[in-house]
Image (cartoon, rainbow, N blue to C red; front, side, top):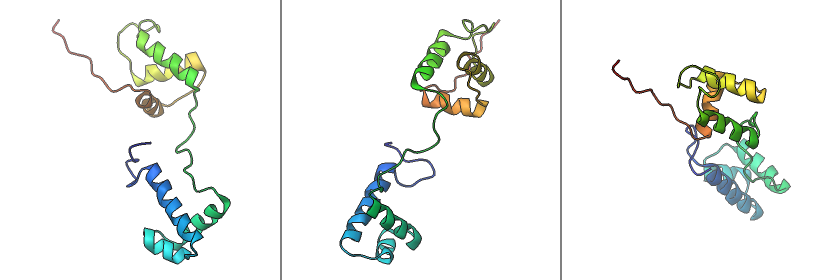
Length: 136
């Protein structure tokens, strides 16, 4: 992940690099208190890092929850969205979150709430678009 999470000051890779640097200090005999002061973390966090360094598990873990859809299912959803709402059985050329969640439920047998469907759409590269108003 190249950009940090909005609620996080450092990226996942930078956090991993920081933990590994702390692990090298533990190898040199430094205490958890020293590492905590050096990296501005709590001593409890430094002790956890020390335990994880001993186990060899300081590498970054996958972030966030797992997707309900497989990559193949996601590709099918993208294809269905790009084909248009009329092809999916709607009368107008307008995708809404409720229509998207219904499409996912019908085609993939997976239920999403509109908010979660929005996160899925963002991850798949879609953005919010407003229809252009036309004079009748």
